[in-house]
Each structure stands twice: as structure tokens, then as C-alpha cells.
Image 1 (tube, rainbow, N blue to C red):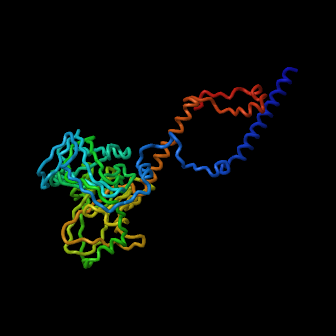
Image 2 (image 1 turned 90 degrees about the vertical axis):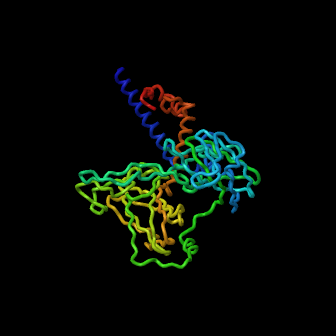
Image 3 (image 1 turned 60 degrees about the vertical axis):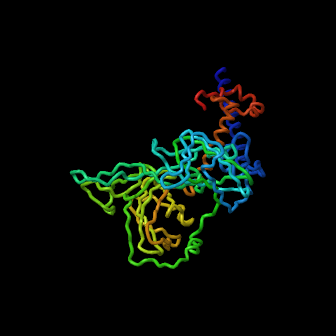
Length: 450
């Protein structure tokens, strides 16, 4: 008799459990679409404590609607307002009246801004012999950091071969050591992570303002500091309209610059290397080591660049072809920006994409229809630089980083209420509707839940 009663109770309990599960599933299917619930709700609106503060995008939003003046404001670097660890030098490496700033220096200049709005900050500087790492500075405007990334502005160095390529007694080429070369160089204050491809824009009020550079790492010599207008990059069409000088594309002129013959590079790791996987590399040898390319797996971070020197025989229009291979990121692309004599000539070459391929490919820089771009070059020597960039991926990665930050903040808020090891979910409304369920089924606790 007792066994029959026990069986009946088990059957009734099982039936009740099935009914409850069916009820939950039906409720879930009815509410699977939450469009009505969140209709009219701005899910992108900032929630206190969830969004990153002090970001560059937030800084731009705060000053949204500000003007973009055309004025240039030059700063006399030697006439600083206050300074620590700085020394004025009357002449240094061909330039007069420059400012030497030590690796623990702080210097503030007063500037008179003719019109309120956004400006870019441009510097001309030279590195000095030190530890060979990147220069870091924190920037303050009127005593405050405009945004958090302004606390770590990076300024690079020049590296080159320390001698000629040597050959051992077996015929193998030995690459030269990399040495730093000290030359005047120019740079804008920009994002070293590559999320923002354009230089930073800084807002200044009309009238007297102050700019402060605080050394975070390494000394540097500054010869020029200037506020420059924020200008849009020319399109190829505009570039052609501006370059209306007479000149024809020289016939039968081909100049080949080997990749391993780069003159300058941003880091010593971007030295010449050798590849035996393809007979199309020049020079080529299957028995000895010959240097025949540069870059590779070391050339993978935004801001890294390699520069070559070319010489053209006459003024005119020239095409540019790059032989390269991107066999590191399957299903993705690697992007490079093209600089000629220190400037990106037009917008279309600010992001040059190299698709994944195991073979070496010749790519003539062209428009979407395959028509090669014409670059106007005057007779003489020119510098051509390829710089690694995130391109369109920069914006996506920045949004991903912001979203990750929001999710982490949400998770922390949940932990405040639940603890690190919360109980399994229990619908207390169901407890009230079906109280017998608590007595006819075991407790749903599970020590392995997280």
C-alpha cells in the first residue's frame, strides 16, 4: 500500500514538473521578442557608471559644434612661461634657438589664440642618445589633460643600417646592425594605438591659453611647436586639380627599389630578411642566405613604418607598384598608409589593403576601376614611406573596447548584488503559484554553478 502511494506521489510530482516546464516555455516563447518592451528606449544612452570617462570621443562630444579656424599659431619654444629640466640652446644641428627637455622635465608656454575652436598640435624635434625607446610626453591645456590618452603621447625615432651588408666565407649575407640616426623630424600629436587615424584635435578658447608638456620618458630637443588648422584630406580628384603643372609621364622609365634597401625605419626590428619560399623574390638563392625583403611578422603594429628613397629624372607623373605578401592574417587584411615626402598625397592612399595570400603579388596603386593613380614628382630625390595602420578597423576596435568596458562594469554591478558565487536562478513568482513544487521536488542548488 505504501509503495503504491509513493508511486502515485512520484507520478503526480512528475506531472506537476512537466506542467510547470510547459508553462515556463510558453511564457518564454511569448516574450522572446522584447521589441515592444524597449520601444522608444535609447539603448545607446549613457548610464552613470557604465561608460568610460575622459575618452577622446567624449572630449569631441563635449565640444561638438566648435569651429575649425584657419589660423596658425606659432609658439616660440625658447620663450616658455615656466620650466623644469629644460635648457635653451642657441644652435643645435643646423637649427637655432631650440629647447632641450630632459626625461623628467616640465615646460609650459603661454599662447594667444585668435579664434576659439579645434586645432592640431604640430612639433619638430630631434632625439638624443639615450635608451633608444620611444619618447613619451603628457599634454596639458590650461593645466588640465584634455582627455586620458593625452597623458601618453608617443614620438618615434629613426633607425637605419649601421653599415654595408657583409658576406661570410660560405656566401651567406649578414645583415648589418641597426643604429639610431639623429635627424630633425616632424610629428602631430596623435593616437599611438591607431584607433584614430587622423591627428588629435584640441579645443582652445579665444585669448590666452597655456600648453604644458610633461616628460614621461626620454629626453628630446624641440625646435618648433605650432597650432595648425584641422584640414580635410584631399581626394584624388582634388589632388589632380591642384597638381596642374606641366609634365608628362616619362616613357620607358622604371626604377626598382628593393624592399631590403630601406633607408629609414621606425624600429630596429624592421631590418632586412631573407625568403626562400618563392623563386620570384629578388635576389634569390636556394643554397645561400640572401637578403631580399623587409617587414614581415615584426611589421604588425599601427604606427610602424619603413621608408625608401627614390630619384626621378624629370618632373612628371609616375605610377607606384608595390610587391608584397600578406600571409599572416588568414581571412583578414593588412593596411598601410602611403607617405611621399612626409605627407599622404590624397585620401585614397591613406589606407592601402593587402589581402591574405601565400604568394608574392605586384599591386599597382589604382582606383576601384583599376586605373593607376598618377603621382606628381619633381625631378630629384623623394622619400616614400609605408606606415602600418588599422584603417577602418580602428573605429570598430575602439567601439569594441568601449563595449567591453561597459560589459565589465555591468558584471561588477551584478556581483555587488549576487556575490561571486550566486545561487541558481529561482523564479519566486512560481513559488507562490505552485508552492507544492517546493515539496515534491529536490532543491535545485548546484555547487558547480557560476
